[in-house]
Structure formats: C-alpha cells, structure tokens
Length: 194
Image (cartoon, rainbow, N blue to C red; front, top):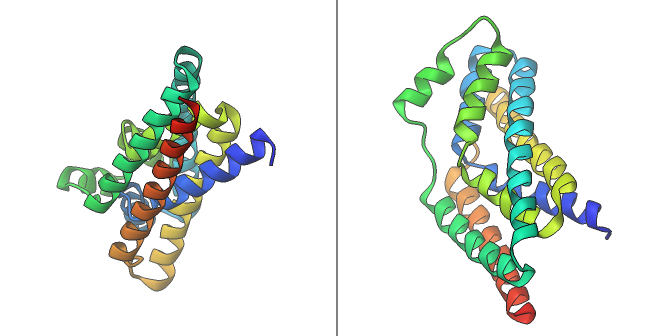
C-alpha cells in the first residue's frame, strides 16, 4: 500500500473508532434533533476539515523537527494514553448541551462553530497530529476528516432511525483496545528504529 493510501485508510479507521462514543457524536445527535441532517453534516465536515488541517500541519512540523524513532515512540505512548482517555469516556456538560440546543441564523454556522470549538485539543485532534507525523499530511487529513464525519453521520442516522444511542460501553472498550494495539505497534516499531 503506498503512502497516501496507507495514511488515508489508517487515519480513517483510527479516527472513526476514536469518534465512536465521543462527545462530538453526542453533539451530532443533539443537533440532529433540532436541525435537518444535511446542514448538521455540512457544519461537522467544515469544522472537522479546518481542525484536522491544523492538526496535520502541526504533525508535519514535528516530523521535520524530530528524529523519526523518537516521534514513533512518542506516538505509541500517545496512543496508549488515548486508549485510557477513551476508557474514561466523554459526556456533554450542561453548557455544551445548551450550545448544541441553541439555534442560530444558520444551522451550518451553529454546528460548525460548536464542532470547531469542541474539537480543539480533543483526542481526535491529538490522534491526527500523531498520525500525520508518521504517515504524512494529505492522506492523514483526508482520512481523519472522512473518519470523523462518517462516525458522526452514523450517530445521526442511528439516533434518528432507532431513537437510541449505540451501546456506549462496548464502543468505548473497543476503541480503547484499538488505541492500545496501535500504541504497542508504534512502540515496538520505535524500539527497532532507536
């Protein structure tokens, strides 16, 4: 698999799983109860594309500044940390719920601004930075953006069609295991490089 395709597939998979059960999915569900799904998805897509573009820029900068072996080791440790973070779980605060319920002149703008602010410093942003140091910026940006939008679209679809959430505990454990596997893989790879 060439570099672009590997970056696309890996970042899509990692971010899709990381997003399951995340507070962004809860926000997507909240917005979908107030607005039509298409404007919600457009707002999510625009906000995600911007945040993840900044993330891959940071990741590419780190890759140019640090030796590859150390980046891989730090990335592996970060992924183990993301696994623990995922086990802890995310909940919407009352303030975030109020923001999600507020309308605005434009559903796209309301959703876009809320998602942009919610994603700054979130685990998916940090995971995207980590992936970009390893796989390059463009494939990682595209894959991570599509992975997040797909996961949030799934939440909207399931929430609207079934009227209930995905089983949060199972999803959280599955995502944590995936992060741990990726983290251990990167650490073993780093040990080989150092």
